[in-house]
Image (tube, rainbow, N blue to C red):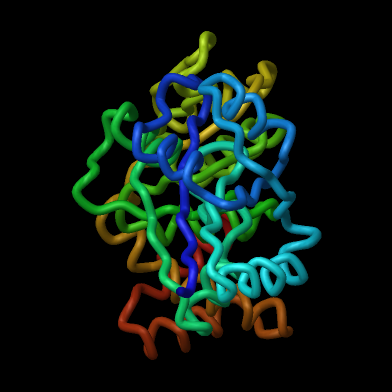
Length: 269
């Protein structure tokens, strides 16, 4: 009989957050594919799981996927884990799931810990509609465009070294935008700092947070987000050599937005 792939989320900090179903799947698997076998072994040893492990990370994902698919076609069950949280969510695993689907191999996903969901809930910001952006872009212009275009609560991972720059970019767009910076979730030094973009930009300008960081950002005020696509188009025209004021008029006519608002937004970038 053909085997299957079981996607297993692992704790994002506190090892007690692993589920009974995940432990059962890890015990029953013929092989556990791990982002880092050493980190996964800490979890396995904690619960007496004697599973055989193999590395599966961004540098060997393509080659290893073919190998694992062949093993599943031969009848083996493979459990996929990342270092923390749900595999595939800003972690390796997409190529393997895609290959299994193409080969007609069953894929089972178990529920479990997620830093993005934990941060969204603890942020105190609306969770009815939200967007996960993975890691925030590094370029200032791309950051500002993302923040202007956000029409729902935005959840993203960020390097602790770039939190200050991200908050400064958000403050430049809207200093009153509500934000929660969630650090070391579920761990001993868990911290959630809530406040306006302006206040957090000032705080993190001189204080670099430590550990894993998830930022949760409120939606742009109504009207501001609608301007973002037109403003991006205007910026591209100006970068190509167009004069700002006439180009703003053309974009405004095509998009039904305000030429003055577009020009003002361009000058504030």
